[in-house]
Length: 164
Length: 266
Image (cartoon, rainbow over all chains, first blue to last red):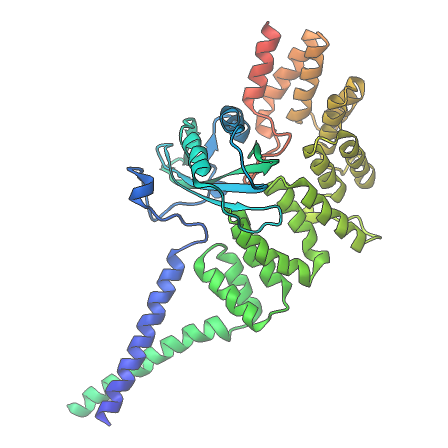
């Protein structure tokens, strides 16, 4: 009887602990979170790892908008040749100092299916975006914030034809 | 003493079990409508996604669950995942979700042909209704898609349809602006000015129309008029049309005014 009580306590404890751990993991993670990888991200730092909202929720802005981004970098990228048609979505962080890092990409074809894109070409895109230096990080009266940002590169006829 | 200790252990085990049962009940057996609302409210969180997975398992034919679950993926650039889920919602209830998918194709991906396919299919499914995908007139959105494709005559036709369908007092002012932009690109400057003026007649704060007029007057070397509209564009810049998610195809910036001012100064 004694062992049965202990077993009941042990099982109920393990179950409660597992559910609590699962719950906290679920509460602490979001779709689109980008995990730091020093090998890829170098010395890029965020100001508050626990609070990185999305650009649309907090107003991250590039001077002149995405139109200015396109004007600044499309010339340098439009000669890149691609086998694919579709979209490259580049997600990254604009930290509270207006620096960018943690670049990660996902690519889709016109049917919105995941496609592989040559890494060397993706690196060229990331490196060019990394050079953009007119970011206004999200801010309010109290502080400036890190935030996630997304840029899309539209691929048609083997070239980048639009950035938005 | 041993008995007390045993009772304490048993009570603790009961409490822990009740705690676990409460979590399991909340995830699996609480009202599905309430769980849907909670998951939707926590949009983008892993917990929200897990709750949607449970709801889909329990109600595999409920299109709203698939639709709502897809939203954060498409907002955050994971379109392969977002569309895989959203396509299921469209399959289950095309009349309700085709418009949203077309809107995502148009505004988030600038995939104009695919957007038009969705809008046209929606239109064919609802012959007696002027559809409003994601709250916007379907002809306005079709016009925007053709504008993106640089097919300005078709774009103009849809913007004019939108003005006609909605009525001048109710239509999105940007329909006048886009109609003006189409005429401008087609080289019809008088018609372009007329549409921009219509926009300003509806609201003097329509920055995009002031900028359009300034651009045309500058080309026509009517510098005083150009300057007047540039000043008004600058004054009302705070009212410009923008969107927290995406840049509009006709979005204007202070830099555009500065550029025209520089041209004017020369």
